[in-house]
Image (cartoon, rainbow, N blue to C red; front, side, top):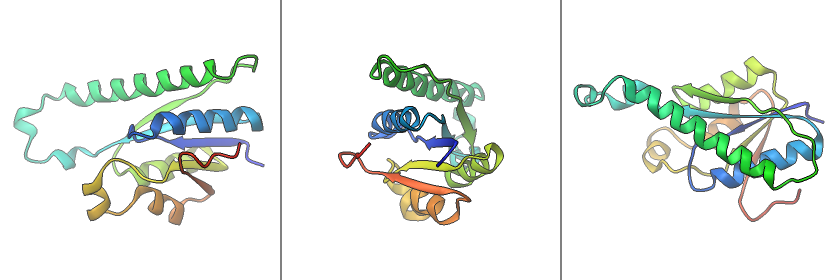
Length: 152
């Protein structure tokens, strides 16, 4: 049975459901559940530097953190009567798959939950699916979440 769960969130359409699913699973298993979001590496924006202020990266990081924290709060509200868990939210920079796998290793997570697809078609075409890359290389079990097929 897992002791620590990491949920990878990309802020796509299914992300709020993914947060709720991971959060609910964590409560049912009575384990720690944390969340991670990986922002694209700065090199992804190469050529746009003259028009993008340096503080934009910090602002985007704060927005992502607030959005995930809001979803976690909503998930907590949907489970009345349960004891409150503390959840860490990590916002990383770089390749999503590499950032997620690094965090799994760093945090000694036993289970990783990812969505079955994200919102970046361009990234999928050139780099491949983050879910597939993570499932292939993760040092722990990976649960690939599909909306509407929950059995918890």
